[in-house]
Length: 83
Ligand code: SF4
View 1: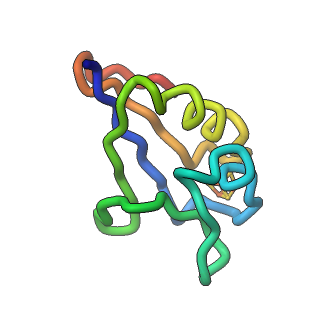
View 2: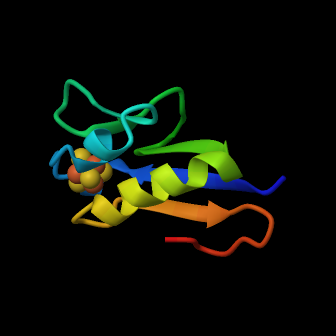
């Protein structure tokens, strides 16, 4: 099964809340006013989480809703950027 990686480039987040509205099971707004991926790994200023195919659509929708292109999704099999 193909795996994907979602990345939250937090410094670029403007706290609009769109990702958390679109995909509340994966995204939430936290105390500093920025978004956070639920149950993620923290890598420096960024957050990362691996997801499967079934969770791609909702996270892609969240990424498409982001006005500052904070959310990056990569196919871990091909290393291609999905969005
Ligand atoms: S949609 Fe983008 S800018 Fe808005 S809260 Fe989510 S990550 Fe931040």
